[in-house]
Image (cartoon, rainbow, N blue to C red; front, top):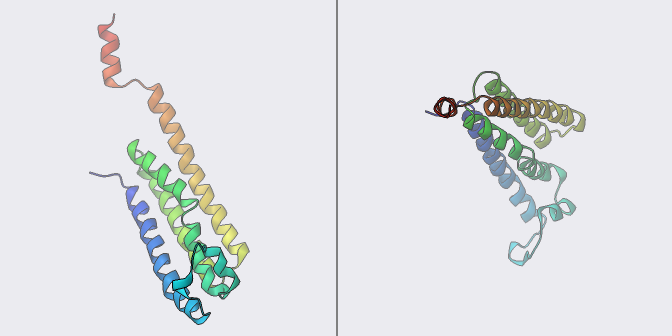
Length: 159
């Protein structure tokens, strides 16, 4: 049996791979069109492409990079909740909200890239992540404060 919260985790990883494919499908032809000689590239970084590629081609790359930033915190907290056996109920809903908001953020950034819309989606997803983090913290405190059956049994025998 597995924790239900792992499903949105897998969904966000899958979405990240979709963004990778979308980025490559658009970026490689744009690089070829810009005359980039892949055989001569040495030590370059993705941001160097901002100088030579159209913004629309770079938006997908920027978003792909963003999917390796804050979502890493989501993965950590979702796995923490799964290990604490708290990956259902409201936490599952919050995890799905986070994933859906991040996908919406990706679609906005990769298409029309309006910063105010992106920021609103980012803020809402951050609130979902903060709630998940709070719930994990509370669960850890409650679990730590509540003795396990083994600790309770040991206390009886120590008398």
